[in-house]
Image (cartoon, rainbow, N blue to C red; front, side):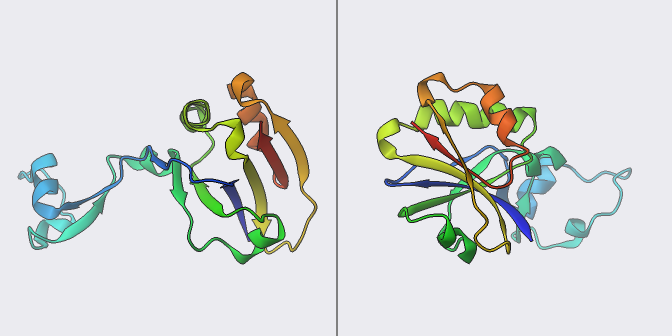
Amino acid sequence: MTLYSVLVADSKLQTVDCTGITEITVRELKKLHPITGDTPEQPWHSMDDDARIVYAPDESAFGQLHIFEWNNPPYDLALYNEKNYVYGIEGNWGPQFLDDFLSYLKEHIKPEQNVDLIRFWAGEYDRKLKSRRINIAEIECHHLESLQNEQYIRVAFV
């Protein structure tokens, strides 16, 4: 089972990627991290320079905020959602994630978009969601902090 965090809306939303994860060539990676005599052997050292790889600046990138249009969400979401636009939310809900998510909500979400945050476990089949409303004009970090431990909730941003 997986705990999902999802934004659903009646209109298209802005996507955001704070991870810094990109696709680059091995040649570009070698410029970022030159190979010297002291460099421990890595698999990419022997790869073709034109090979494309996924690059993350460091491990923390995998915990940063990523909001993406989700064309194939878990089928369980249909139990909780009838809105047309679905966006997955990835990240570790740590301090930087929460700051970035707060900024995203303040800058990109308007009450008329009818946006909800849904957190649920896939595979639990139609568990009742708690409901909460948060005024988007008054949202603060503590509102989001309180959500990080919620597992079955729908938050309407009004």
